[in-house]
Image 1 (cartoon, rainbow, N blue to C red):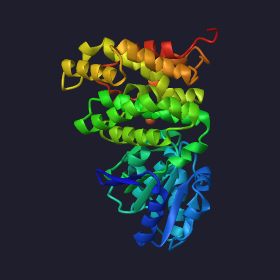
Image 2 (cartoon, rainbow, N blue to C red):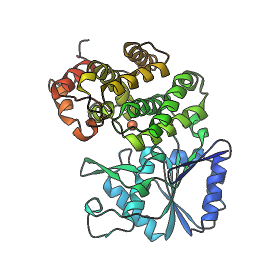
Image 3 (cartoon, helix red, strand yellow):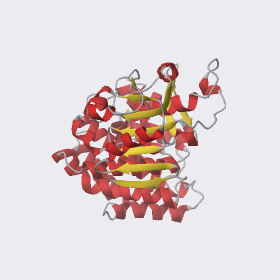
Image 4 (spheres, protein in one colour):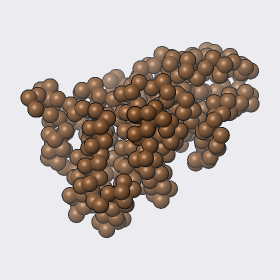
Length: 376
Ligand SMILES: [Fe+2]
């Protein structure tokens, strides 16, 4: 088992990580525990994990893949009714998002909308145990919740879980499409983080390690159900990287692709990435990164070197082949307005993390390459 510090968090991984999580719960002194978890993660971590805690374990499964505000309210109500004093999230990004929001909302006024209140640090202990290798949400200080159908981002330093516990045994049970999509989410997050205008030496170190690891381990992970530990570690590193740098254009473009065509998040991000990467290489002159054009060129060269490629064209071709090898399809146009709707959906703030300016026309052109005509 390895323990590593990341900001105010302890990251625990390797054999015995789950047992260590149980030990932390036992030693926390907390009375009851709210376990925000998917039913499959609860089952796959083994019944013995949930036994032997000093207090009661209260399970909360009532949340959707894109968690709703009301679901967080229900979880918080349960947390209070049952006298819980600690949070454990186990599952994909949504379980962790719900636990993060419960933690943040707990000290707030019940009679007002939590999303409109001033955020204060909440000191509830939160252990996050991801059951997928992708989002890296266990090591970020932000969460997503849907309020009246609208995606809301919630951010506060206290949302970084106190412990991230990486138990790669969960990956054995992931359906193949989930495995592919979540791995591609991690890869996109790492690549986007590397060129983000907010990147730092620290974030680039995490992103670099994640990219190289996925480059070397993806095939064994997808084709031979091996390399779990490597991919789990890479996804966590990519999460740490975007926690510092945030994501950029491919993520910004992917959200509407997900809701419009029902693609998994990582799948949508993956098919947007090659277009934004090629665009970036072609528009270095429009650099918005304060570190300048030469720095940006060098960043792209470094990415090529990480992938063992001569230039961005080869790197993009590698990524495109990878998407093909994973059999992740491109969306087929449903209506004439698709591309316009997609281009209008892109969040300008997230796009601002991309190191070159992207116009609406550029978005339209990229989406036209991503969305296929019905007869193609
Ligand atoms: Fe993502």
